[in-house]
Amino acid sequence: MDFFVPLAKDIDQAQSVYTSIAEHVSAPTPTNDKRIQKLIWTHEGVECIGEVGKLPPEVFRADDEILAIFECDNVYKICTQNRGVINFDPILATTDTVKRVIYFD
Image (cartoon, rainbow, N blue to C red):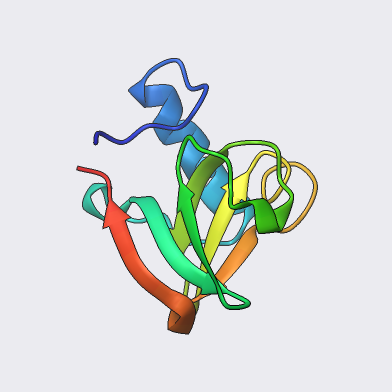
């Protein structure tokens, strides 16, 4: 799947929004081939799937879609408008709980 950010009008706006979110959550901005599309991890014994453009797993009680996922030192930051962009901290998944990372094409 090609890189996108939900609600962005075009690729230039998607790039800009993605970079802004990365800066806001203190995440490195990865190169084009390292942008995460989907993350599969375990949270409190439950397998979770977070994918850009879809709602986070129900356990996180978030009702807005995932805009971006960033790999930081020992944690992944899963960002929605409410979790990571506007109000609260992003959803976190530690690297030791991650089963699979899928990147955009």
